[in-house]
Amino acid sequence: MGHTFSNHLYHIVFSTKERRRYIQGEAKARLLDYICGVATKKGGVVIRVDGTEDHLHLLARIKPNISVAKFVGDIKANTSRWLSQTFPDFRSFRWQGGYSSFTVSKSNWEGVADYIDRQEEHHRKMTFEEELKKLLRRHELEFDPEDYLD
Image (cartoon, rainbow, N blue to C red):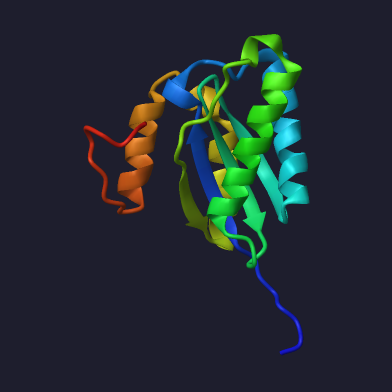
């Protein structure tokens, strides 16, 4: 085959360091746009991005020659730098060290996109910690319930 065809969809979740409530207001709106730009430059497409004050969810398509770790690392590094330079209150802003990623089938991407769109609604009933535990269990990932966040 002369060409490479792929549709690698990922649901990616990461939090602010110590779940500090930074992501809100004008900064949130501009951050979400900035993430889409960084993703495009790094070989991906953000299909959906949203979250709450302390974490974000992305539904992204990533080219097969880009690792998820590199993609997320580039987004986190670029946005940390941009936020700290753009907003005075963000000078000490940091993302958590890790992230979670889950593959998404083409047949289920709309459900994941809808889930991401409804983050504010979800978090009226559930904390980020509870949500992440639920996602990890749903995807059958082993983790220490006492020590899974940094």
